[in-house]
Length: 132
Ligand code: THU
Image 1 (cartoon, helix red, strand yellow):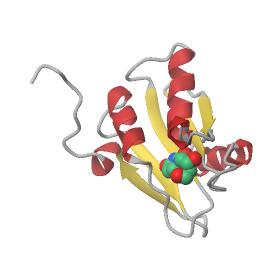
Image 2: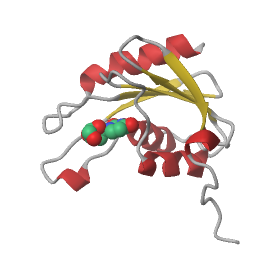
Image 3: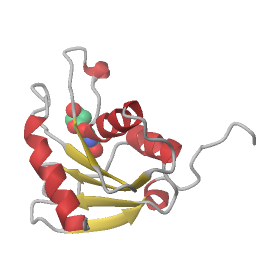
């Protein structure tokens, strides 16, 4: 699967977002090394802090499905934004828990362009280890 196809998965699943408070739907598509794609959407809550972002929904679904650290090949994130929508910092930290620093992270904008970053670009000097 190429980045355009993965991004299309993220765009499609965005329709399932539960975002009644922000009206800011987000979709994420996580590509596994076995070729499967696991999707996620943001799920909001009237108690705003209980909200879960699309990226974390995808990762937590993957972990609950039995995938482990190192199984992840790439992630695509899509919103309805003019500029490239970057993952929030909590999601970056979750990515750092399970993914290699070189993992591609694909972002998109309203012109359907795709910006390819690496996790280490989004979260340099990541905190990943208690044995320091
Ligand atoms: N959100 C995501 O799902 N992913 C991001 O990358 C940025 C923000 C969600 C959280 C909340 O439901 C809404 O977007 C507005 O912050």
